[in-house]
Length: 114
Image (cartoon, rainbow, N blue to C red; front, side, top):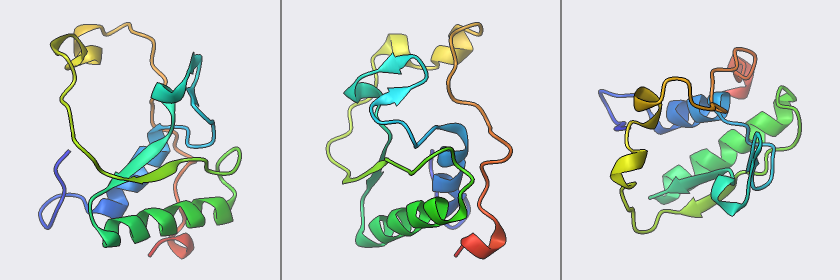
């Protein structure tokens, strides 16, 4: 996803990620277990690191998620594009097992936002 002045900001991108992804399970998403399924946010700048840390703190403070956030906040490294068979996976496999979906109650209130 591209973000910037004309697109969603970094904080909004994080908030959406945390609405569709369970950040409270260590190395797990649903039935999928292992470090490949860990919750992680990758930052490119010190501002993104601070926004990530502040967002997680706000999530823990509000008590809407089912437990403490265990998402790792990690400097971005080399990016490798996924193999062709993993591109547009859900579009090509509409009945595939899904663990990421919008959770309407997992939204930070205005008082927990920047």
